[in-house]
Length: 194
Image (cartoon, rainbow, N blue to C red; front, side):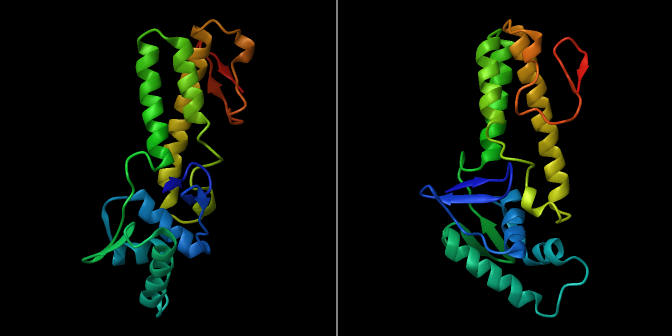
């Protein structure tokens, strides 16, 4: 299973894109992905998805969404535990984990003076992004802080990619890549480019 949140929420099983259902079901999965490999209580899920005024049928609605997700992902992946649910994601199955690992490796490579290889690794990390993190569930309050944290990481990696590109001797005109967002970023010399 491959799970992606660096863009709209996606899950692939054996290379096949899985249908994740409607907005509430996708939000439920996003909440579980953000807390992968930990038990998330039913109360916490209900609060995250319905807020302070859940409908009278909220328990049944949650059960329905969980049942559908278990069918789509497999019961071994989405497990019922005392008091809640646990989404099992193995190391390397979540795009955020791959992104963060590549960025760490790129930083180590840059620190070792291998700017060209570091730039390639930063580029590979940034290529995992398919749009704003959690793009299709950003309307959910629980998603906003994580999406903002991830965007900060993306911008830091982009800045470090630019620094590595400049350190490897590429011309200043290549400072911005196609993955740059339309915000100001610091270029290698310390100046800001829009």
